[in-house]
Length: 219
Image (tube, rainbow, N blue to C red; front, side, top):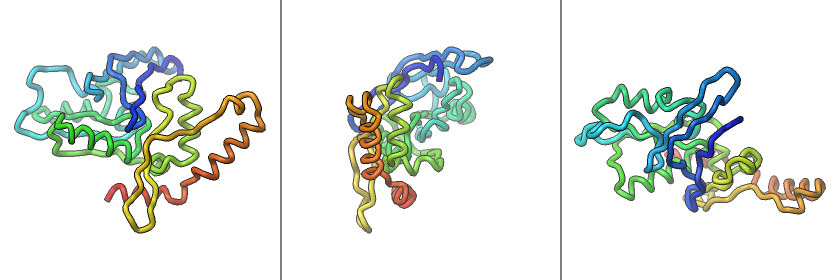
């Protein structure tokens, strides 16, 4: 996307997180105006103007989690679902913890980190599930490759991500961040590039197990 700002920082556990700051996306497409994307110091997206005492201290917060749809990719702050929800729920604090590119597993890890740290008292969680999250949750070959070629030249903070794999009838196996790789030789020699790509397809094609793993995650 033309003129897209750098929105991500690498994270050793989550793969990436949002980069704090007021980001302006200048004319994301012909005929469209600039977009304003405000990432707060706590790495959540803004859900309303900063007001002292906003929300009720006696009511637990609402957390919005998920990927691009819940984040509001391609929208200015005030156009996002979380911002509009905060407007409707004036007595509650609404947190937009969604991050572009996240699936269910990354969303859960990020939410868990926030709760364990005692950063927020969260009472309601709204997760936006889409079909593509299944492949993200298991770091399928197709998603690894897509993230690499989309971000390698524009967003180095979002190349590797954590994932789960099935373990028979036992608990899911949890894995740290990994991503698609391409050696220097593959850049210069197309045949070697094909060899590396084929090897990663054989190793990381998990499309058959993606749905089952996602259902386990959502239990």
